[in-house]
Amino acid sequence: MAELLTLFANNILPIFLAAGTGYLLSRFLKVNPRTVSQVGFYIFTPCLVYKLLTTSQLSGNEVLHMTVFTIASTLVVGALTWVFGRFFKLDRRLLVAVLLAAMFSNAGNYGLSLNLFAFGETAVAYASVYFVVSIVLTYTIGVVLASLGRSGLKEALLGMFKVPALYTAILALVSNAFQWKLPLPVERSVFLLGDATIPTLLVLMGIQLENSRWDGQLLPLGLANFMRLVVSPALALGIVLLLGLKGAAMQAAISEAGAPTAVFMTIVATEYEVEPSFVTTAVFTSTLLSPLTMTPLIALLGA
Image (cartoon, rainbow, N blue to C red):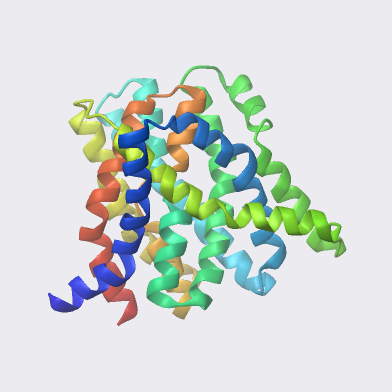
């Protein structure tokens, strides 16, 4: 028990303390979370995606394996959640909200920080790949799902092309392929803005947690949290074994897959008006519950 408490204090508590600054800011100054989320959506996140993709030191094969893992784990969790959602006869908008909460982990402000504290910089490199791929999935599949909550498939697919992070990811991949470099002043500005992403999202997480309100939807909320915190890391273990990931790659993959619901989902749900209150509550509850699952998971992965 003492070891688990130490793991929690050293690896998870700092995340909560940083988010606490946003919580206090919102409590006393009534900060508008939508304004902060838009800054993250349109400026900081695209810059971080570009920086991570253009500075990664992993080999092409290592990046490929982490990419396959991220896509597979996200889609499998989504498929199982959809099956359970249909079984419980959730309406379309609520089912989409549950999918958003269950499929996408807090791979950035929670996952990257956790991997740095618990497993070191090598794990962070792998976790960064997971983070970048999850961002692309969030702003492609996630946006399509969110759009389906209030529109048809055609409109949802068109909405995907309004996401700035998608274009910076493409630009970064092209830049890597042709060994292009941005002009130094531009590159430094992009990297500087990218470095602001994780602190901003930690603060945003606190702001969103302070603004979350219990909406009484116990069954779908329980489903979302169970899929995110329990089923997702369990499935991740199986996928890791299939792909042959070991060492830091395995640690990063499973810990990222087990992280609570992504704060990004509050941004997406708010932007596309898909049960934002429910999604914010899912972020809040999964984050508060995460030490109960993540602390023993860290102990297992670090053994």
